[in-house]
Image (cartoon, rainbow, N blue to C red; front, top):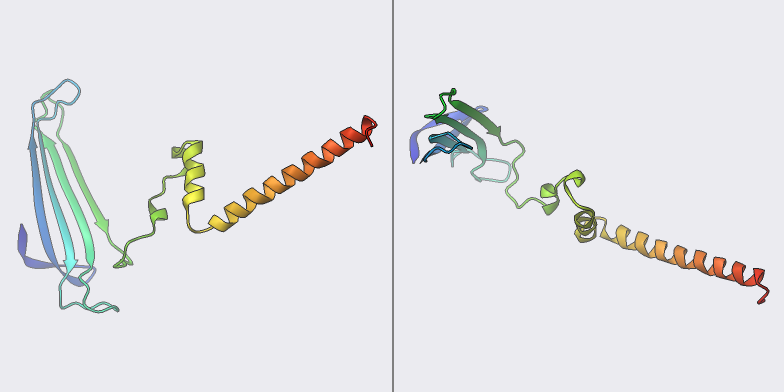
Length: 154
C-alpha cells in the first residue's frame, strides 16, 4: 500500500510506504495470543531531493507498530512501537564483517574460522601461524640437542 501523502523526516520530504500484517491463530498454552496486528512503514526521500551522490532515494526511517490482542488467558494486550532511523546511509553492500557475531556467541571452531576467512588481517594471521610453527620447531630442536648432549651422544 502506498500513502498518497508525504511526510518530513529530519526536514527531508519523504514518501511513505505501508504494509500491514494480520495474523490470526488458535491459542495454545505456550502462546495464548490470538491476534497479531502489525503496521510497518518505510520512509524514503522523494525523488526530487538530492544527495551528494545525486538523485538516490534514501531510506530515512522505518517504523513498526504492533499489538497482540485477544489474549485468551485474560492478560493485557502487548503493544510494540519501534522507530529505526537511517543515518549516514550508503548505497552499497556493507562489508561481511558488519554481520559477524560477537565472540561470546561463537564456538572456538567458529572463532578460528571467522579469523582465517576474514580478508582484513588475513596475512597477519598466516604470518603469526608460521612464526609460531618455526619457533616451536626451533625450541624442539634445541631441547633435542640438549638432551642428546646430556646423554653423551655428542
